[in-house]
Amino acid sequence: MKLLHKRNAYFFMSFFKLFLIFSLTPLIFVSGCRKTEPLPIKPELILVADTDCINSDTTLPMGTLMRFRIKANCESSPITNFVITYDNGTKNVFLDTGVYNNELFYTLEVIKGTSAIEDWQFSVMTKERETAKVSIQIALDSGGVFGNINTHTVILGAQNNTLTGHFYSFTNEAVYTLEQAYNNQIATDICYYFHTEYESTLSSPNDNDAPSIFTGTYGLSNWQIRNESRYNLTTIQSSEFDNIANDSLLIASYDIINAKRKGKNIETGQVWAFRIQSGKIGLIRVDTIVPETTGTVGLTIKIQE
Image (cartoon, rainbow, N blue to C red; front, side, top):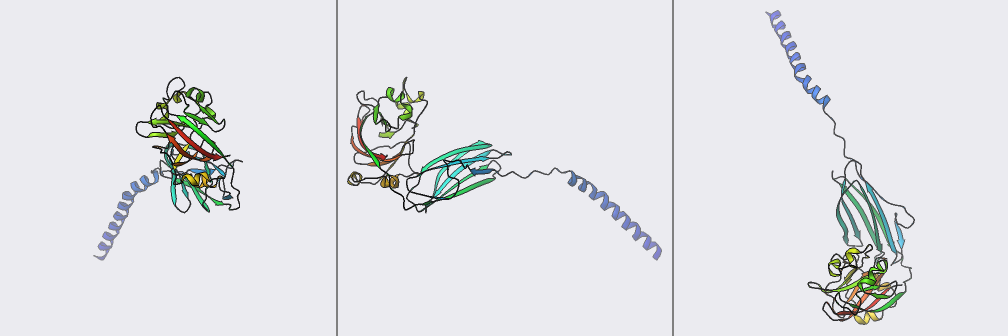
């Protein structure tokens, strides 16, 4: 009887082992043949070390033109988002834009402001949500010398004014009609028009609304070079504007985050900060306005030399 019991136990164990072998073999086979998914490749992001560009922490005087050249790429997945933030004690989003490319090249030109420290951060994200970022810190050189300024007194006509030009060139110190501006595109910086919604408006050739205002043979849609100027309203009083003798207040007043491509609804007595395509910063005081499409605007402008 004992012998029979041992024999049954032996057969049971043998059967159980065979069951395990045949049961697990498909699992082992499937597991061994399963394709391993490659890990997502992170994007690469660098600040290019060109001679005219900043690519490491540095100290600069107020008013210095800062040029950053950004290069990013990812072979396995397209870059879908590009963000630039700027922190001078308060974090601001300078740019947040969608893209769809395996490579990205971007050049940023801004002016060193009055903050003791500016932290700039550049970041990209791919379709697979992989990210890369690079940061740079710009300190203020308090020993810097303020720059000289030029003063311009200008009268511009609105779009239907046939006697006074609508555009101004700081390089040539000249008021241009539309045809004259067309022939001096590279030197044309700002313009003025009267809009049905924004009324009296400071603008520039690269304003998105301007091509619908200045039309025809020499219209902005036919230009090859459309310079961009940006504007922000300040709280500077007229008497304070009169006493400006260097570019310190010009630089301090220009808001790189909130400056827009047009100064809308301008009014007499207002002072607007602006930056033209070349990087020069200035202040515009609105002296007179005749608010209609055939009207005019009188401006006193102080701009970096």
